[in-house]
Length: 288
Length: 266
Image 1: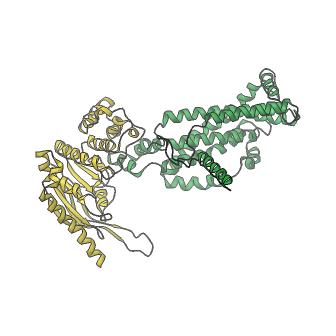
Image 2 (image 1 turned 30 degrees about the horizontal axis):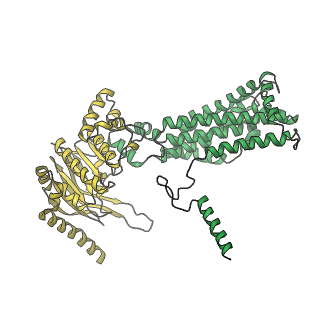
């Protein structure tokens, strides 16, 4: 009886250690969710996953048709870098996709951000843009892909339009939300210093909305990559999405996986870049 | 010499619900601020103090009566009336010197010129060392000082201060009361100052107006000179513990509470 009790006690003690129920060390705040660094664990997880992939495929437990070895994928990366696959080299595919994604992203930046700001500061703009944006925003781009083909054909204009539409809505809505994060005191302050309406919008509202605008850009480019493969499904001559889909048709699984990794790597690097920009442009985010 | 005049000003807010009644936020307020008046408005929440300030700032149009600055009607906000907000309202993306010179930047003054003017006022509020700091690196009291310096840069006729010390801790608040008085004496500006604190009101005011809610109106006005005793002795705590100070405080508290009881009874 006493033995089972002490076992119970020990296990409760260990549990409370894991879930942080005891008092914390000085310098930590009690009850803060998820305190502590997770970098080491993330590195460990990544290495373990790659190792498992390598181990299982090299033991021959899975057909290469379903999951090729990491070495094979790396080799394909080198091969396709120099030789053409599905009409182009890897760099050719990447270039085509980068042009589409960043072209759309750029167009969305110069249109969605002003539209979002205008919706935030003016009821007429809000009244005009709110119904169309809220209507098409929840529709998956694959849903209106056929319509863009009927209207615009199958060249880059159609592809960029499709990605642009996917990027536009989240960016416009973020900019609009950013306007609301500016306090009424900041606006009244500017007016009481003699600001014109235009000055208030530029010097207070747009700058105050920057954190949300940048968040919107990060979300937007994410939608862009998501939509890229859909855009390159039909009649593309180059593009990473096109490369992956062609490879899948011929069951060249190592190219499929390689393409996925390339998209993932580019998207991740761009997000790191955006976070860097965020630290530079809005160092005050979350501090006031 | 500037004069800010309120003549029988009333402000009526539309009812909050369909069946509700109009809210008389201010009723028949007549007030003259001139010379180097330091007018303090004191009263419980909802007595219309902030509405009164918003009318002077030009944010709210009065429903009746007139508001004149140097005989000209106030039609909207302008740089001739500097506003200091309860929440400092600094722009987090600008450093202290740029926040301070924000108004001058809007007026398109040249950079080195506006830096010079802003530095002068930052020195006045004791922040000349912090020009390159950003608002998130400052304490609450320091932020409020930047807000004050910023309001002064456009050389307004009057400073409108909406509970500027309300969000500060008690010790910082005492220091800031002295600082505001010193700056008022130095610059000779008219001041309209809102507070919840009876001590603060009596200590700082040349004229104290006690306000009462529903409808918001002035129920009592005092001419006071405790600030002068502070200038003479530089000892704020002693001034605040003088018998006369305590007597005035008692009387003011009786007025405010008596008013509350009267309202509660009917």
